[in-house]
Image (cartoon, rainbow, N blue to C red; front, side, top):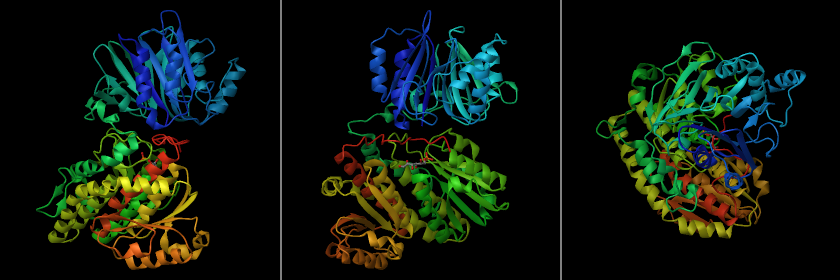
Length: 612
Ligand code: F6R
């Protein structure tokens, strides 16, 4: 959601800024813009729509300068338009700002500034940042002092980058609630909201903290604390291990398909170095200091949003079944607004690919207020969630670029189940039971590879159902998670209406929708729920509803009942969602392609939802 980039160095800034914006396209946006400091003036170009259009507009101008900023905007205040696209400037045209996040008190600030004579041209909250800085700059000669004073006026979340004609050769950025990463190069420095935009230049980075302000020039940078006025700050430099090229298509037509096919490797990387087959358990380096607290947990709450939240539905079953600890999944946004009693022996597990989801961050903060231990299952290293939780487990699946989550989601389920096993072995699950589970986990990458060989037949299935306007996606127990996730994948990529649900609920109302034009996808592996799922499939068929069933290899019985049967290899019941997700991802992908949708960047969506 929104992308920020700023460059200062010896090279031409424009191509670097545009390349950075292209690499952040996956986050979701509706317009973009750049501002480059030239010899005499700042040139600002904006475009509604794709970065390609912005590039085209830039190509028609001569834009030279070694300092520049850029932004991709996902509309919050004001429609997507050129007028509302960032960067925004002050009245004098000296100060330009790009901003991620929301300034909650912008209306009151705007009224004050209008009374002082400031003229606004957009409907955004961002524009008040430029004007507030301008106001302070009237009395403060030093730009960083003016910005520091302005920042104190803002309530809400922001990551900003500012440039000024009067201070060429300098960029100033600040973070409070929205991520910013500083990339350290040789005779050049770069700041961005997303590491993928930095990687072509350097993999040496500093993750800024909330309250940090950084002044960058080609010769160096200085970080200070604008929130508490603590002066110069030292921050750790980190080397990012993701390769710049891992965010490229590598021959696939879309990132979503590439990432679906990366899942066998993603599962291997999730387990790498963590399974202890001889001991029948799992090790998580980051959890070591908390072992005593983990031993005495009396409850676990799993939170996430969207896909990440649905994976928690599999995690809660696994934790209860293996470790015997009461576990429940809650939608992160709702947990954050409950004010329940302190829960000092409880633990909150926040699941998030990006590590920046605002609702999930709020849940962590609420859990801390309750005295709970907070853990994170996060893919993006150095992200806000990774840094706010007491301890974390990284997915290690590399950058996920398509908006629709695929490889991160299977890894999220697997990690929750590995965590369940880790807890269970602390609480009396036998070594041999642990070893059986580990053996099955080790087979998952090969099983995923096998499922991917059915991509061709799933593509044909998508052609067959191309015209369907509504689907059910149903399952129960572990695969209730798969049902909700399958429904979400279809909705977000192919824009068809899909109701995901528990198949046991069908008879209690939803079955009235079933007719020959209302297909159902039913996840029915040969497990403890199989007979019940089979009866439900029969009830759907009795009402002439088409059924696509996902079941276990070797189970031919459903071929006599369902219209189409897709197979997943036989595994432990708790691991079935990891496999069941895959055919549904492929179906959603191919249906989206059939319908001519923008698969990697579905309309209205953002990869990283950094606002509540
Ligand atoms: C759907 C999808 C979203 C995310 C959700 C949480 O395919 O990707 O539903 O799962 O926005 O995002 P993270 O995992 O970054 O917290």
